[in-house]
Length: 282
Image (cartoon, rainbow, N blue to C red):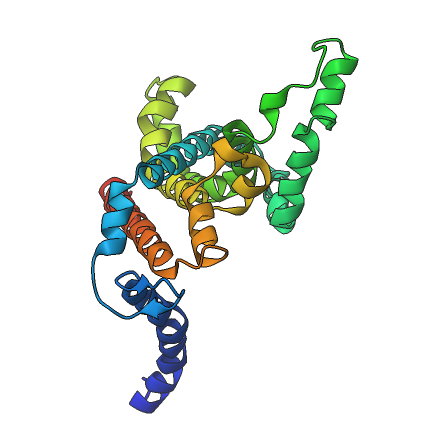
């Protein structure tokens, strides 16, 4: 239907874009991870595994990586707990207002990431909205220190930011469930709870897996929220990478950590794809 020249003209620009701005930076990062930095702060192009050995031998990197995964896991669970009920209500229990409610759910995506992060910093601060309200209500006699600059603040902020990303695939999966299956379940005498657990939820699992993957991967690689609200106990692995590429000028070590993070993310995406294929409704 289309000539070979037309197909080449259409496919070549996006392929070049991906190669230059995605694959080439990944290849450079992979090469940097095997190099080193001399005492004179020069990149030495000597191929070795010292950066990976340094990463594995120092407890601080392993602890920070596990802390990042634990924070991302909590954000993933909370995002699903918030996003799934909203998606279910919008898909099955709203009629003419569905589009309006859908827009209200995704409105946070229209607001800048920085604005949302600073908003939570204002809310959770020592003199912030929440502490002021608690003291005014005589529920506390002094500001609560754990609200800000803690893993709690990071999890809360990231949950607020990434819940829409968990909501969207769940809502799409629920919308694609044939309604005649739900009606057949009711006709056969199943209650609403039984219909949900035996029909709706199993068919929505691909969306749940996709939403969980989005929330975990995006939270795992986040560095701005931990920097603004995390404090020493809320630092994540991405903050260490930013510091290594910035003030510390340890690009090879930063590249090694980045490549390990990339490997973890690719593994999660592969596992998510396998699970989605297994639970896909056809």
